[in-house]
Amino acid sequence: MSEILRWGIVSTANIGVRKVIPATQKAERCEVVAIAARDGELATRVAGELGIARAHEGYEALLADPDVDAVYIPLPNSEHAKWTIAAARAGKHVLCEKPLAMTATEAEEMVRACANEGVLLMEAFMYRLHPSWEAVRDLVASGRIGRLRAVQSWFSYFNDDLGNIRNVPELGGGALYDIGCYSINLSRMLVGGEPTGIEASVTRDATGTDVLTSAILAFDDGIATFTCSTRAEPDQRVHIYGTDGRISIAIPFNIPPDRPTEVFVTSGGDPPVSPDTQTLTFEPADIYTIQAERFANAVLDDQPLPIPPDDAIENMRVIEAIFRGGDRAHGPQL
Image 1 (cartoon, rainbow, N blue to C red):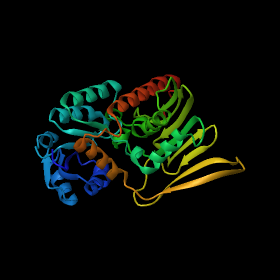
Image 2 (tube, rainbow, N blue to C red):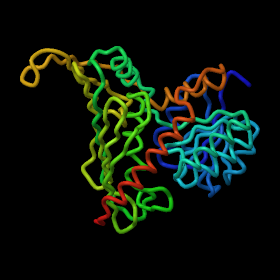
Image 3 (spheres, helix red, strand yellow):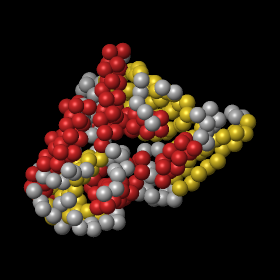
Image 4 (cartoon, rainbow, N blue to C red):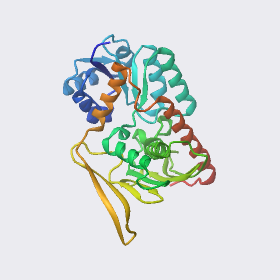
C-alpha cells in the first residue's frame, strides 16, 4: 500500500459532488482518482468539473480499477448492501453513507463480507469526528454536567418532491432512515450502550415514507427522545442533560465548514433564571475532510476505525424497532 489512499467515488450523487469529493481532495494522504456513474457521459462531465483523472461507465468498472484502494458509496440506501459487498469482493475498503443498510440483517452481511475480504468498512457519520463533538463526549465522560440523565434532539427539513429519492420507500426514503439515524447514533454514542426499551410514533404520507417520526429510547440509566421530519421547517438541535448541568450544540449535524462552531455548557449559577453558561467556540473545520483523513489513517497506518462497523448494525436494530413499534402504535397518513 502506498502512503496515499486512492479513492474511487461510486456515483455522482449530490452529496458526493458538492461536499464529500471536494473535502476529500483537500485531505492529507488522500487522492480522488476515479468516479463512476451508470451514464458514462455524466461520469466524464463530473470528473472534468472536479478535476478527477478517470471516469468509469458503470460501478463494476470502477471496482475493477487497480488504482483504486477505497470507495465512497453515496448511493440510495437500498443499494448500499449490494455495492458494499461487491466492493469488498474487489478488495476495496469502503466508506458508505448512512444508514449503512435497510435492515440489521443487511448490515451484518456487509460487515461480514468486508471482514472476510480483509477490507475496512465504516458508516459515514461524519458529525462524530468534528472537534466540537469530540469535546462534548469528553465533557460528558468527565462528569462536567454530572451523571447523564437525558438526551433530546430534533432534526428536520422540508421536502415534498415525490420524485426525490427521500420520498421513495423502495429506495430507503423517509425521515428516520435519512436523519433520524443521527439522533439514534448520538444517543447510543453518549450513553455508551444500547436501548433497553423503545416507544415510537410514525406518521407516513401517501408514498408510504415516514415524514414525522418520534421515539423514546430507554437506557439502563437514562433516556433519549427525538423527533425527525421531512415536512417541517429545516432545523436541528441537541440538548444533553445531567444531574449537575446541561450541554447544547448549536448546529450538531450539518456543521458548517466555513464558520466557528459553538457548544454551550451550563453548570451552576441560578438556573433557570441566571444559569452559569460557558460558550465553547471551535475553529472552522470540514468534517468531510476529517472523515477522509481518519479513514485513510486506519487503512494506511493500521489504526482503529473511528466508528467501528458493528456500531452500524446496532443502529439499524434500533431503527427497525422504532418502525415496528411506531407503525403499530400510530398509523395516520398525511
